[in-house]
Image 1: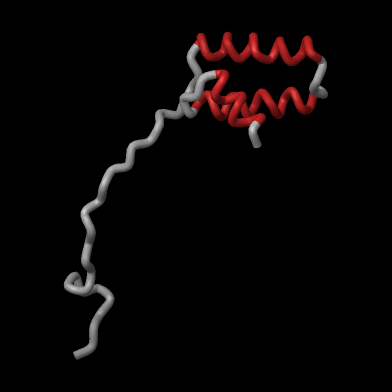
Image 2 (image 1 turned 180 degrees about the horizontal axis):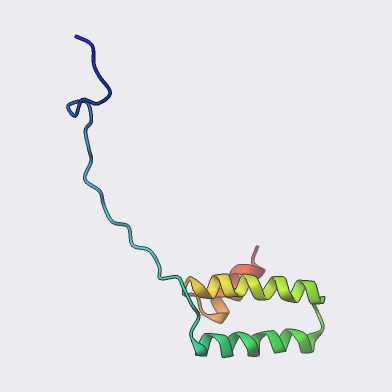
Amino acid sequence: MPTHYGDSKMKEEKPKTKTAKKATGKMTDKQKADLKRHMEKHKDLKDLTPSQLKSHRMKMIAQMRKGNSIAKAHKAIMGK
């Protein structure tokens, strides 16, 4: 007997499990202020060019939106 793609007998559906995801989204005012202070330190050190500063800031924002603190975000970026 030929099988048809539309047969519901052929499909064995597994129960879907929900995976826990970290909240992503907007940064809080505290996070913004912390990031601003962090970036001021880098400006004062003059260790990065303007394009490197912008890149570093964007990477920090991405990490902080995932819920990381300034220290954890910086460690993750600089550890790469």
